Length: 249
Figure 1 (cartoon, rainbow, N blue to C red):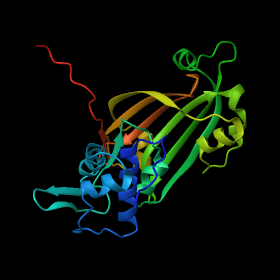
Figure 2 (cartoon, one colour; figure 1 turned 180 degrees about the vertical axis):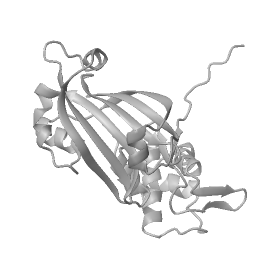
Figure 3 (cartoon, rainbow, N blue to C red; figure 1 turned 45 degrees about the vertical axis):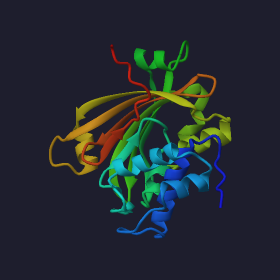
């Protein structure tokens, strides 16, 4: 059976989600064999390199293993660590659903503040420099694994002040404002968990974390928000596929 693939989503990612779906529905269990690359390529109407890219993500997550001459086997139904892909941002909720976990976000604080010069510049704010500052904590199966502090232009998005504590922001933006995130600029920094993160994550002392500074743009290249994310260093890994090597002769 040929599976139709949404052209807006990279084909390898659809294959990756399809396999995760088979795992979460227990159609493949630890020790079980995955469909071959050739079978998946035929199902999705793609070449084997595209299938291999999808399987590579599962290898990075330490969920599958390739055995020469035997095939590809599932070794764990959930990843040992969560993998944040720099190729395509799929979103926390979708990622956790793929892992078979229950995601939840809780808004801890939402206020209106004056943007710092840096944030005002990133959001292209001129006269009205007020921004909505939102602090949220993200959970996977009730375990806190990430915090997020975002800044959005107040005048444009002030209705978000009334968003339910466990509401999801991007669906609201799409439904109410007809705005959707399209691309982003992301910068990563190694940091130690501060007092707030230690309390939220249940750390007994400072532990290594990764901070992500992210400016999100719509399809017209207009900045929507600036966000600062703290990922637990003991829970997350980061992955990117290098597109091209430029090597001196």
